[in-house]
Length: 629
Image 1 (tube, rainbow, N blue to C red):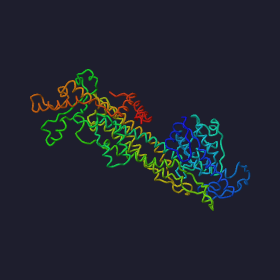
Image 2 (image 1 turned 60 degrees about the horizontal axis):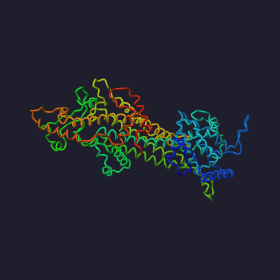
Image 3 (image 1 turned 180 degrees about the horizontal axis):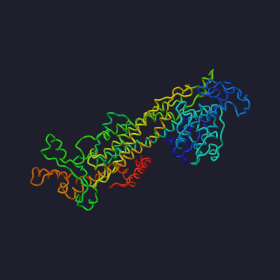
Image 4 (image 1 turned 30 degrees about the vertical axis):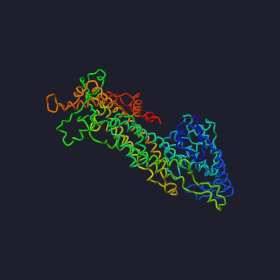
């Protein structure tokens, strides 16, 4: 990607982060802002030359903060000691990095590490950390050159920032650690060499500036929210396809309905689903027009093009003597029971979808608000205020604070973490309704004809979705509520935000899989619903009421009571079906269905489904089924 993102410490966006992390965009440093960066570094050097005691510069860190660095090394007086290079202050910064790079586990993916590098560079550009311009430029050069430090996933407690993982990031800059270069895992020194870069030595406070901050939790959180934004739209699409497959009711999506309870996410979700369902002729169709599935038989169809159908259809007639107390209903609807039950509302997983999806969308939006602030915040310690002129003491210009504490991020991600299994769960419930003959409104059990009793159809797809939902639910416990103090209790309350954000990012994959399974199942159900309705329409058009009457059970024969009434009512049903246009889903649903069908065919009989599942999961992961914005 040829795009270059200009970093000034104040205007980085989530979209730019994704461009650098996942699309290979490079970065450039704002020259005007670099003057502020150097101003803070010069200020710090001046204070050190004056002998001012400064935390993390001329003192130790954490519980060692009471230890002032001397003018020379005491250990030089030990027998057999070897002279060390550089000053004690340089050694302090170097040792901070090499001793804190102690994470364990598999390495973070390259996009996470690139996002961490970007975030660290951007926050240091604010000019309140004391880092030199040359060091910041070396960090940017490493990012632009494609050197990806090996950062094991586990080891941060989220205060003081992400010390351990950020040390793995910085140690490569010193020529240590390991890094990936063009996909090959190398020593940090070798990776720099192949990229045409040289290691650096750290100056005053630079080790602390590099490893004290929230970059890991922020990187994983930002990438997770980018994925969740796409999956929220995918969830709406899956729900829309399922609603069309049910020939469901649209009243619960109306704008005036949601104006009475205007939670932003709920209003947005209802509007989005209405847009996806635009032009649907399946929604709100009269109950009596919808036939129920019947197993195929050789005598089911007489027309040549209908004989290729793998199902039969049918209705039950409700005799006049069974309509007592329901005369008003049957004055509006014809007395034929097909696939849909005569009820004015759908199940919660369909009717309450704006409320549930919308609540998850609101959780996402709240987390985005937090992340957007954090992207352009200073999160290391101490903070340098070189322009506080006239301050009598250095403590008023070099201030120890707590911006490294990740609790704002941790709690925001706890909220999102709890929302993920909710979105997965309602998706699985819709999937289950589609395969269960007791709840799928006249579709075949497990969405297969199963004439010979040998087919399982989509039965086990729901099992997999159920397993994923359970796994997501058991992983939703908030890490942020369980602090484990560190640094000999100097850091006596930590956020665990790094674990929280990492969990959320990891959970995105399984959420995507659940939504993919719903789409896979809904596409099969939609095919059945459309084909069954259109077969009924063709039957009424070609064969008239007599052909339609042959599909109706509980009908009187000629000469029996109520026969004339039955004929009149079947004629009305035939006229209604013949006069209907083509039955089809909403335009955006049709587009998504067509994309899926180009790679996964309708399943007439049992077949190996593992390839189908891999394909639909990949389509969701790639965002290939969502309509273009």
